[in-house]
Amino acid sequence: MTGAYKGLRIIEIADLPGAEYTGRLLAEMGAEVIKVEPPGGAASRKIGPFADGIDDGEHSLHFWFYNADKRSVTADLDSPAGRSDFEHLIADADVLISGLQPRQLEQIGLSLHQLVERHPKLIVAAITPFGLTGPWKDFKSSDLISLAAGGPLHMCGYDDHSIPPIRPGGNQGYHTGTAFAHIGILLALLERQHSGKGQLVDLSNHDALAMTVELANPYWFYPRALVQRQTCRHAQPVRTQPALFQCADGHVYFALVITEEKPWQILVEWLTSHDLASGLDDPAYLNAGYRQLNFDKIQQVVEVFFLVNKAEQMYREGQRRGLPIGTLNAPEDLLQDRHLRERGFFVPVEQADGRSVEHPGAAYRFSAFSPVHPQAAPSLGEAQGIFVSARDKR
Image (cartoon, rainbow, N blue to C red; front, side):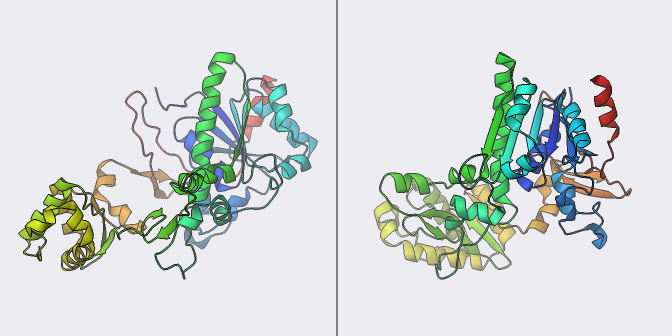
């Protein structure tokens, strides 16, 4: 068997990353995902950067990433003929992924509720910035707006609060909504196995992000405490010790635990082996309370220890000793990451123009399913013949 979702047909009308990435995740697990684009192509085809600087709708790296493994057809959903073709297409589909907001759906005369009524087995996943209902349902959004309005942005940034919050990169706001949408679709598919009926899944990215604020919600609901952003560590109501340490040639992240005996003893032994214990091997430090009272000194010693050594050396030796430590990689470092390479994470994919480009592969391995080899994002309308087949079936 190939792919966990093999045999599922997914229709997608979307150009925002949250909805597009949902389709991508289903496609890379074996589902047939057909992207319905307007005649001029999805707006995401115009988002740079572009391979070789060519902005022709076929060289967007953004589009390549979010639409790999899909097929493309074009239909003018503003026209009766286009809507008829679309209706034929979803007649035997399992899931429709819609990234259109209520006003956009109204403009093209498309009712998601009526689609479910006309196609009782169809699961419709509406993935929008603010959901299908509520006063904000038609507001425009972006990844930054989603993170800000939903709350996570308040917790991202630096110890110095004169610096505004900092948006994490990589469309994490959109991708959070994608994770919830994927779960929602899977639950709807499981329920359909029992009832035989589809349903409408309304995923609001705003709702998803309001759920994704770590400890901020419980701290506010119970002790009425607001968490504070901190440099490279979890937001807390009070300042915690830094965990990012500068080395001679980079940085490492080290969760310095001074309250537990075993990690403390390992750390002192490590420092001693480099003649850098600087008094932390004094028997007084065997007492956890004493360590807490003298944490500033401990922090200074550890900072010097890392500063005079190289990051990779500290990472390897720390892990060998059983301490939670890792190097701080730049995105480009991951391309040469030995672990990812040996797991075959990066996969060469042939593009429409004949070039081979490495794509990130799946982050999971199934023992019961064969891997699905990634395919390049589709050229505009390359699978137009699907419409003819859909009409013939009707």
